[in-house]
Structures are given as C-alpha cells and as structure tokens.
Image (tube, rainbow, N blue to C red; front, side, top):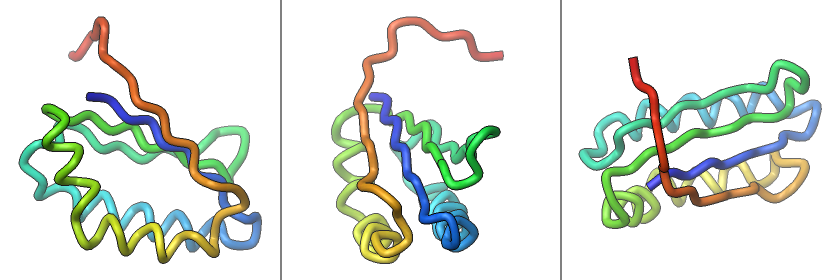
Length: 98
C-alpha cells in the first residue's frame, strides 16, 4: 500500500512544520509494517512537503494511523498548515529499487 501525503505550511511556519514532520520519521522507524516513510520538500516551494509512505499491507497502515504519535501530529501541525493535507492512496504497479 502506498500513501502520498502533501502538506503546505503557512509561509512563516514552514520551519516549524518541517521540524514536526522530521520528528515523525524517527517515530515511525519502529513500526514493523512500514517499508518506507520518506519526507520530501519541494525544490520550487519551501512551504510544500510530501511524504511517500509504503506499507506491507492494510493492517500496517491501520496500525500506523492509530498510533498516539500519529494522532498527536495532526493536532500539532493543524495551526501550521496553509490548507488541509492532501492524502492519496496508490497501488504499486511496477518498481525499480536499486
């Protein structure tokens, strides 16, 4: 299961949002069913962040979404966002991993 989450910070709060999101990556590292959890920042817009997330299965994604730190993250970042988070689910069709 693939999730792509896009988060746009208020301009003056981008550094705060980035810090919260970086902290989340460290917390997710201990999740057994999380295969990839990568934070990116747009090269063109320093207020736009994107997570690429890959989970073993739906159960792993459900576990991730129910953790206390996941729930706390959305409470912490809500006042930092310029717009609601955009979250899309994808099915992997083909991949190249080197």
